[in-house]
Length: 193
Image (cartoon, rainbow, N blue to C red; front, side, top):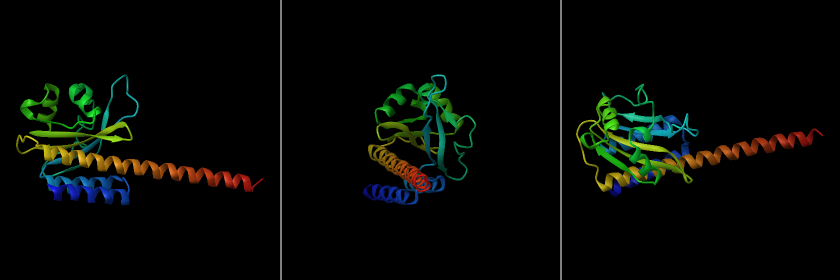
């Protein structure tokens, strides 16, 4: 288990160095997915402004094993409202808690989604950037109805933390770049007077 935490930490460090670009995030998810022996790893980003009161999340990044459909390719899974599908889970994620279930124990609407995606068990952990609930990361097992143990959930939360750190870092880089651009423009204006 310690080795798994070390690998997630190393992969998160690489993401900080390379930037939060799709190919880098997907490579990290592939590395973690293989290590965790899951069939799908994905990241959903909450939309910043609810549409007609609906908080929606978009599938942004993902990895899956051969023969398992990507959630980004699924028309019904590209965008979801977790609040509508599993309202109690949404509350737990907002509080910073991980949630997990097997197919038979899932809330009814979540069970329908799991059946559609041939998912036997899933686990989700929140991605919090600063204090905001940015989105969530998930593991899917499509082979067996597994019960996620405390160590696996801790690893998922560690992955979520690494993604959140990389996102914050990316946001700071972007803000710094904008500030530099504005400063350069101001200096040009001052020099032309």
